[in-house]
Length: 324
Image (cartoon, rainbow, N blue to C red; front, side, top):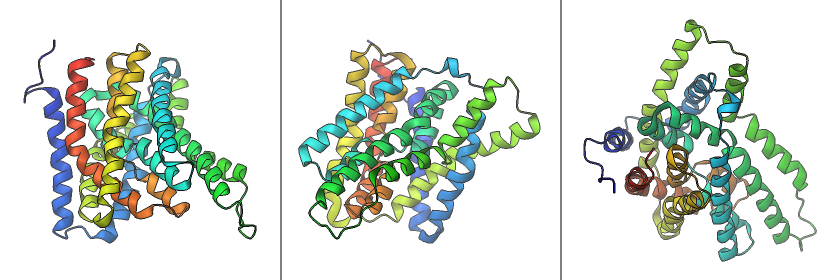
């Protein structure tokens, strides 16, 4: 049996900056050094500049034949299981769909990328980026179908309610899932890698510096966002969502992974990815379909705060029982 990691272990050493940067961001937000109005601009900086730089540079040296999509398939099987159970428990409705998406959609960019990079290095990032390349596309497209079917069912008796054709909405979701600052640079980077060319230093060095800035700024932004988040009357509902997302989702991933014979780094990264807090894209869906907006917003905050406790526990368990 492997020993429990000590304070000098890579897990603890990697977790310290994650917690520290989020705490610093929280303090900065509370002190008013960054105003709430600036959070959107910082988020744009992360998603439109820093994230594409890191994703493209990392994948520009990866050959498609070296990618393993087996763990990704198991990840989505676990997500489908949790999503389906949620719909069964709450009934087929847009509210259930919003909760199901919150239970399964991880914050893979702002928290996942810096965390996996610190703990597992470039090899872990390649595995995570393989997931990220289809994460939003698959989950958000599937969620769109469920939302549209639920909304159509809820409004079936209202002849005066104009609702766009589902196929148009699904196609739009697929388009948005590809032409997006996250999957697009991954796809372009992979295409570049297949040419056999190497990025010139004059291009590679700026991309490297931008990529290195992603982790600290993303984690600071998480803390700043928490400082301006209000939970209020939706705490209990948000906590239920957070417990499923932070604990049940990684348990489902671990169980299916073991059952499928998955082990080592791929299993570890997938379980950690499954344990990440609720991603902000869930709120966009709640807003679009005008359902559970306050509950989902609160769940993002509560799940992120709870993740400061649950993610380290998952990492310790993964390190002990899923050695890489």
